[in-house]
Image 1 (cartoon, rainbow, N blue to C red):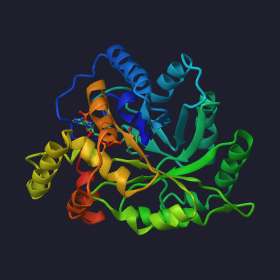
Image 2 (image 1 turned 60 degrees about the vertical axis):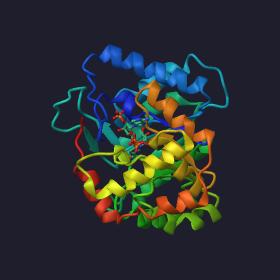
Image 3 (image 1 turned 135 degrees about the vertical axis):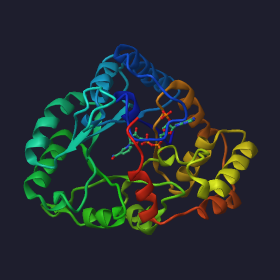
Length: 314
Ligand SMILES: NC(=O)c1ccc[n+]([C@@H]2O[C@H](COP(=O)([O-])OP(=O)(O)OC[C@H]3O[C@@H](n4cnc5c(N)ncnc54)[C@H](OP(=O)(O)O)[C@@H]3O)[C@@H](O)[C@H]2O)c1
């Protein structure tokens, strides 16, 4: 199965996106129960790749609790380090997360995340950028190489923002003891931000694993009055959804899956209905003509990330 489950929406009652419906996540116990059942349903529906992070509130803890009910070597967990969740489940929190790319933070977060072993297979820098200097931080890179060797992990990084291609190029050149450190690249990709296509051949040539996040552009692929400039795109998407008898979400996920061969595309579903709709991705194929139409909706990374910045925690 090429679909993995992202757990951002399962661990934090509020996150940055466009919600189709207002949700009341104020009852934390009910929220946790629902998230736990999404994990179980995802497994029963065939999902075996789970992406998490300490920055996703309860997500790592929940996943750990759920893994204890399983005994299945085919489950793969990917987690990250570098962001701390600070909202304390308060919808009105001023600061929801804090980024810190330091050796101290890596060591601190690893202490919790290592409990995800042996399911833990991928360990990623959460949102690697040139600004934090993380790709030149020798002590951090060496520690990641130690963890890689000791626990047979794949080391990865996630990228975000207008210069993700530049970050990926730099990451490909990071060597520790003469060997490339990074094996897994979790990137933002969808038909609005197609910048990954500039570097995809190189990544595939070098046999890197590609994981795609934000395939639904944080909800921007759904018709929305606030984005009148996407009206033509919405009309085409709706007609493709009708043609293939699926939702718009499945069209957007399938686009990623078909245009980036052998990738794992993350579903960001927050409930079972969304998950089932997302998994319809496995039931059809887009034609070349469908893909060409979707390709034509590409916008500049600058515009893409400007719109993304304006989204609220909700
Ligand atoms: N490394 C990073 O920095 C980073 C950043 C972002 C994401 N990620 C990873 O990628 C995963 C997926 O990304 P994402 O959640 O940000 O983005 P996404 O998949 O682009 O968007 C999720 C949005 O789609 C909506 N949605 C999903 N299925 C739907 C359906 N069938 N009908 C209507 N709405 C639907 C959700 O709605 P609701 O709001 O109503 O639930 C949510 O707004 C995350 O869980 C996380 O693991 C990583």
